[in-house]
Amino acid sequence: MGDGIRWLVDLEHWMSSVVFARGISARELAVRMGGERDGGTEPITDAEAWELGEWYRPGEDGDGVVRVGEHGGWSFALEYGDSTGGDLLAEISREGAEAVHYVPMMEHPPATVHYARDGVQLCGFGLGEEIWRWGREPDLLLADLVSGSVLQPDGKTCVAPEREHYAVTYRRTLGVVERRFGLSLPPVYLKEARLPAYAVRGTPDMRVRLLGG
Image (cartoon, rainbow, N blue to C red; front, side, top):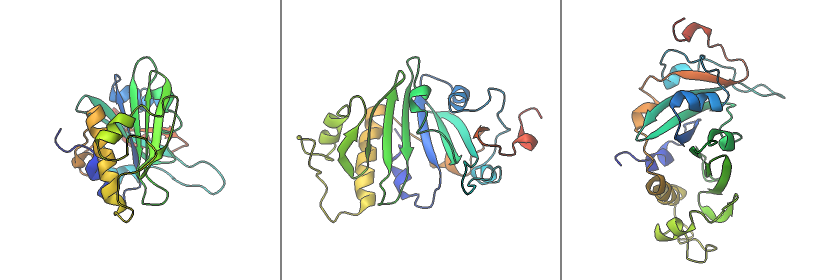
């Protein structure tokens, strides 16, 4: 699968998160996350995306932007600022689609993975805290987590040594998710690559970069 997604663990200062969707285009993914269907910008870089919005406003919602693309049979959306991926995962996965949301965090609180299919959020858990699972089918990935040496067969005991560095633990779990869903995201997409961007929340200034504008 090439680059996979395990390398995302090492991006300690990356302030974005990522939504993967299968069964819909990158443009449709942006729309389901709150973007206007014709609101995509010309392709821009990660650095340029950070210039678009006022990301955090005290006492109110900030702006949210996504850059979108497609790779390895999945569409993906890189989220910036006050985006909406986690809140809209069921909507993103409606009509037979699938969606995976990865929220990168340092050790406390943990990074999280959520999976939805056909309009239902089926399962989710924190990396390193896989003994606590939620969703309509919280044990959907239990067999995968056991075979991937993340959990004991009872689903209530972690395999990782108590003092193992969190990044090692995270990579093991992301490897399970990567293999189960066939996820891959080359590092170039996060920085150097140019991808169209959509406003999904608030009022970021997208006017100067609108496609065809």
